[in-house]
View: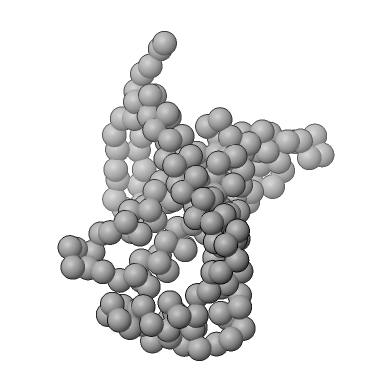
Length: 184
């Protein structure tokens, strides 16, 4: 088994970060994708199968009770019937679809983006900074963002094949470069 280090370098807003990534890291990136995918799939499937998920009480009560800085926004969402109906479907099915996308490595960046967005909302709604600003919701958000940044769907995932699917004689990502933001 051969392994080596790969040089990484990125500059954002004038700041440069660089380092070396061991090739064995690919297995840990895969593990992150599968772990967060399974966690979301199971959570969503439990909600779907129980048929009892309702966000109304949570939106109206939990954020104000825990001192969330955006409690008023959550209460307003919880007092808007059409929005509660939307959330009651979007959360369980969103978790299932995000989980499946990550488990199969298909449309991984899009799935990870929505997973990170959901975790941001959960972070703000479950506001608990008694032990600091970093909690499980925040950590999960960073896992989703890492999965997206690493293009983890290319590691034993379907994105590797979707990107190479030929459209008009060219691989999909060459013909439609914007698809790189969804796949990987």
